[in-house]
Amino acid sequence: MGDTGRRSSVPRQEPGPMPRIAYYPLVVCLLAVAAAVVSFTRGSWLGIVWVLLAGLSSNMTWYYVKRGRTGGQGGSVTS
Image 1 (cartoon, helix red, strand yellow):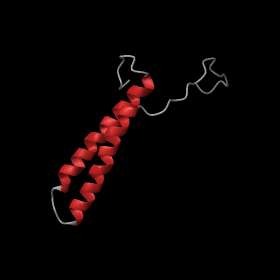
Image 2: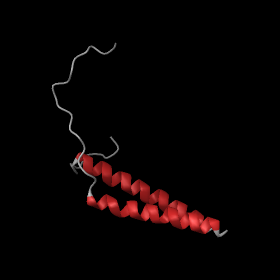
Image 3: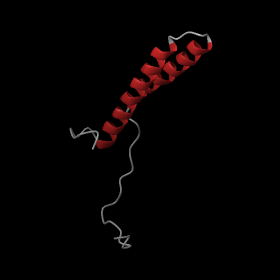
Image 4: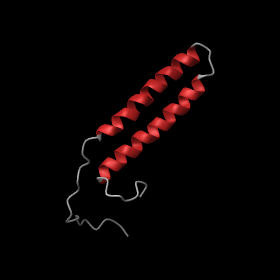
């Protein structure tokens, strides 16, 4: 029902560094956000496309980061 004060005998593993492949969608995300800001400040509605691209690339970044933490063991990334 609560904390029993016991510690797990299994040591916690710290996550490793971000996989290199995750840097590419991160850069795309940052550039898309910058392009969206520039586009909206110039009054163009094309910025909506840049926002959608930023959302897609940020999801790809999280996917690759989570896949890198699991070690690519073929399991589900969402679990």
